[in-house]
Each structure stands twice: as C-alpha cells, then as structure tokens.
Amino acid sequence: RLEAATKQFGAPILMSGEFVEKLSDGNQQLCRKIDSVFLVGKAERTNLFTWDFWTGPDMTTNHAISELHLLTKKGSRSVKKEGGNPDESDPVVTPYEYCAKFEDGERAYEDGDWTRATSRLFECQKILKEDYPARSLI
Image (tube, rainbow, N blue to C red; front, side):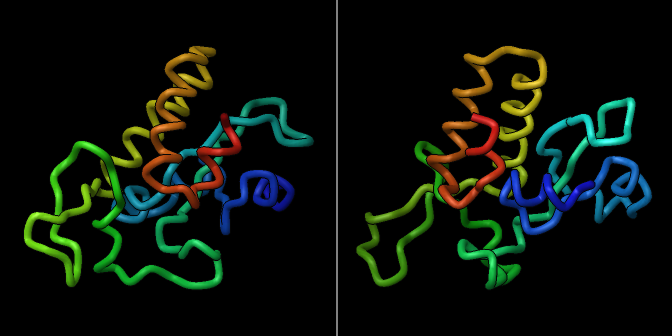
C-alpha cells in the first residue's frame, strides 16, 4: 500500500504512523509527517512519514551527518562561504527549523487553510528545492 504513495511523494521511504510510533524517541524525531491519506483497504486515515533528510538531491547519495545543519534560508543566521570573502555568507536553517515550517504547511493543508499551506510549502521549496514531498502538496 505504501509503495505507490512512495512514488507519488517522491520520497525514498515512507512509513505509517503506526510504524513510527514503535520507533525509539530518537528515531521518531528523525521522521517527518508528510500527509494523512486513506490507503486502499483502510477505513481510517493513515499518517505518512518519511526519513528523507539523509538522502542527497539525486536520491542515490547520502548527506554526511555534518552537512545536515546547513540548509539555505533567507533571513536567518549565516555562515561564511567556503573560499569566499569574510562578508560573503549563505543563510542557513537547521533541519529542525525546516521540519517545523514543513509541518506547519502540512497541518494547514490538512485543515484546508490553503493560503497558509501554500505559503509555508513554497518557503520550504525555496529552502530545499529537492524536497519533493513539499512540492507534491502544493
């Protein structure tokens, strides 16, 4: 049932909410809810989660753990560009901050607040263009 949804969301892995609840607290924090859907054969909605921040832009390579804290974001704190001038910097956002923004957009999507949902999800797309789940909800 989840295989078709995996392709639809462009996520390397999807997990049901039931599965995520059985993970350790530490592993649950690494999961991101991307939607709530009706799966074939189920009478109730199933929450879908992914664990995609470990996957690189082409979905065949993995980010190094040290790279996970450097996602580009306008208007946040900044870090010096490698080899750049001291005043040249790229704003960054932590994966936690990114997930909070995505979760707000996903929640607005589920609530039918299309203005807030599209605003947050477009912000996510500006930060991380490779995030297909954000694009699929827009």
